[in-house]
Image (cartoon, rainbow, N blue to C red; front, side, top):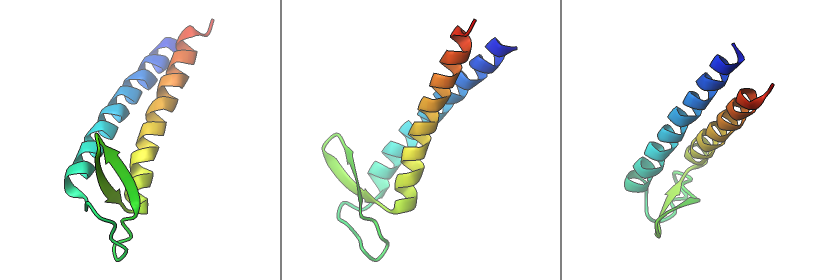
Length: 83
């Protein structure tokens, strides 16, 4: 049962990593290249030298997706190796 849960967590981590990757490049191609204080797009996102600006919600979504992916990988790995 523990190994099944570990496998599910690792798979979820991979799915979240894919979602982060898609969001990263989606934001890079659709967000403004200059800060926009009206829409509060002031958080920088650097994609291979191209800088775009995200608002606070988008930045939180991007960061949260990556952190959640890493947490799933770590939890799955710890469960898998636990004796």
